Image (cartoon, rainbow, N blue to C red):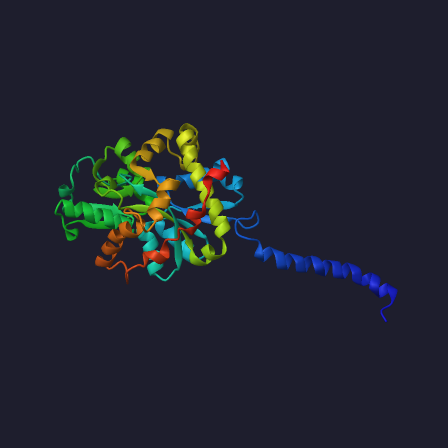
Length: 339
């Protein structure tokens, strides 16, 4: 029989053990999106991803009961590596980047069409380079991304310039401005807001842009498949916050521009100008794009990119877009009930 003194001594020990057990059981399983376990979404400096920054700063994630940490990367390459290493749960990627990620064996799901680049991706030349034909024998800088190759390929083909007639060098996005200013390159494949700054402040000439290939450069929101399968409520709340932010930009553009100018060290005018070169895809349009019955569905449009990547040897096999695009969360959203 345990005597009374031993029983009294055991009570504090049992209490401590219970607290430890409770911590061990609860902490690892706090759902992503809770305050203790923020969902990490990666973006680069492309203007089309700025609503993620605004949703964070204005409080739309918090309003929709989801904790999100926006992680900003200097290049798409760094962002892709972060995704594969588990440092982020998902992120904003161009569709070709998403296809490359999936082709590499990283199982992923696309839940949202973020935007169409309609001029925001550009090939710009130095002051003395006024057309693409003049690039023969010249040096072109680009990030080495598929979308950069995609745009450059189209620009060169339209001017009947062969790839082996130009010199390509890899320049990461955070070095674009300095490389152009120091004239290390004769032309640069880049995107907003840097592209607009080069045109306005450094006498760059626009040689070609995504406006010359409308609806072909597409940005999407992608999550790892394992995260998608286990966290659909959190993704639902992220999408609600996203669409609220798009509405906020429409109704409070000056305030949005002020916030972004501080966060990205650009002027409010540069931000507002760069919005002219993209189409942010609203809720109703997203549903139409994701509907396989639509004449302009993403499954059809994405084949242009798939075909290019296969031709260039950038994909090992044809991507099954029916499996990648997941529209069920989008179709289940009822934004009217939130207003």
